Length: 183
Image (cartoon, rainbow, N blue to C red):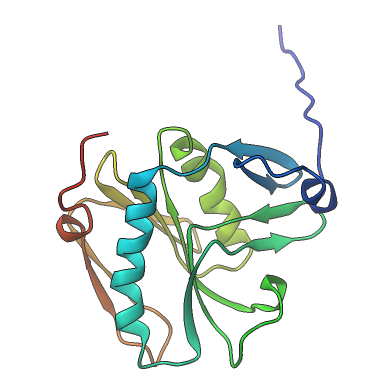
């Protein structure tokens, strides 16, 4: 017997009306996803990624690295990467004004890893992000997704190649995950 499942669909306007409670609320094609606030390991990983990317990109002033941004497609999709690398000639007035999204990074936790891998990776790529990293401090891996369905799981190191003229950047996972407690 097959049972049809019907999910209530939300809009970004409805999402904005939800009172803040510390959880993260995101929409993908109208489906509401709620995850708990990030913990210390998650936030440490975000800071380490900022520490790796910002010094590498500082020679290119139109490239920016920001935590807690958004990638949206109105009326029913808005997701929030833990880290976004984008290029713009000036500081945009809103996230919707960002046209060149080079990299979206999600740091997985036990509560978000399936959601990140199964839904958000494809969501970012469908909205034009050039590369997505799913950083998993539990498995000590980074899943790298690119347009065209290219997805690979990295366990040691990889090279991120941003658009020209930015030079490639080597990411060493042993250094990224150094001294993390077992979770």
